[in-house]
Length: 262
Image (tube, rainbow, N blue to C red; front, side):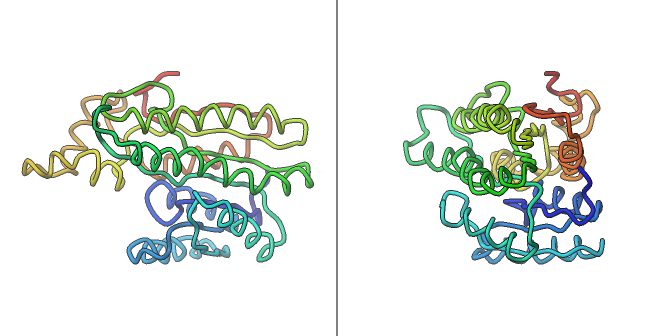
């Protein structure tokens, strides 16, 4: 796929992995629609920064308030992209959350929250774009899963379940839409020093007086074969590759520095 002047939607695009995806596509000359929880001040501020970074590449951006668990919001996001740019080429369903609990301490409400954002949110975001892609006989989905979507992990059973769901849904989407010229792939990131890791996964380290950033670097150096964490830029590179790779569909591409080998 030729990405110059393409139009890309990125949910959860204000910060973290989303920002890496937005700026990677902008560097290729693509216009980007950022969907995020802009009613939250810190997210809105981060989104403005991300738009500025994208604008440095001479592309146009549009920011839309989106709750990916709301079908109407997801439909409105796609409609806004089409109204603003007249086309849509790539959808990156990236919005996600995590929490850390033993399985016996996961409440039904918390299970539903994580599944709603991580799994249902991907479904609703993609579903909103399918009619346009099928009409054009062209389009690409790049969904953010995780290495936790390929292997389970202690104290994150609800998160793993949601990311396994993303991988399975993406494979099904690829099979269902391939005859319409539409591709669907997932990215499975490893360790990234984003809000999820520093403020959620390593919350215990902070409570014990340790520096989460230093603890994150130590863990990454010890566990990752390439001895460094992944970055949002790494994930952005993978998203661009999957958008361009016209004969690649239905895969779950691991970007984890060798941490996960399948």
